[in-house]
Image 1: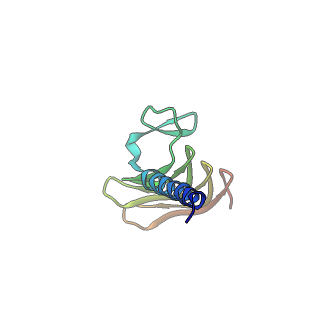
Image 2 (image 1 turned 135 degrees about the vertical axis):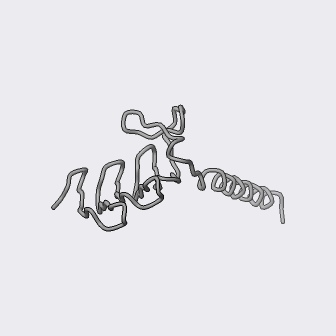
Image 3 (image 1 turned 60 degrees about the vertical axis):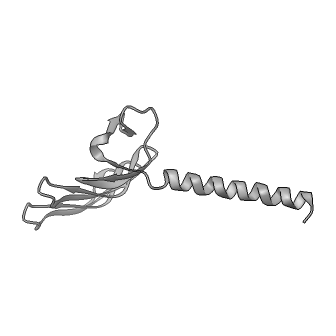
Amino acid sequence: MNKINKLVVCKVSMKLILLFFLNVCFAGTQVEFDDLVIKNNFIYLNESDNKYTGKVIGLVNGSVQNGLKEGKWTYYSAKNKIHKIITYKKGIKNGLQKEFYENNSLKYVGNSINGKKNG
């Protein structure tokens, strides 16, 4: 293998190592909802100036992308029973919404589009 080929292989290897490191460090970010702060409708980790991206765990479970709720969020009661399930898109209620009584029976089911109840 000549010097140019060795240099190319080395650069490619370094990029792969960097991508792996970034994926391990940031892809698995999880925090408790109580560790987050909501300012101007965006979610931040504690008092950070950077919008949070990652998973939320605990009595509230969901995902955050660039400071906005994304996808299915599950809210639990203090007794660890599902209280609400709300679907978000870019921080706005969008999709299936469910609410439950303390005995787990369904209290409400509906749909939202762009933050407004539909039906």
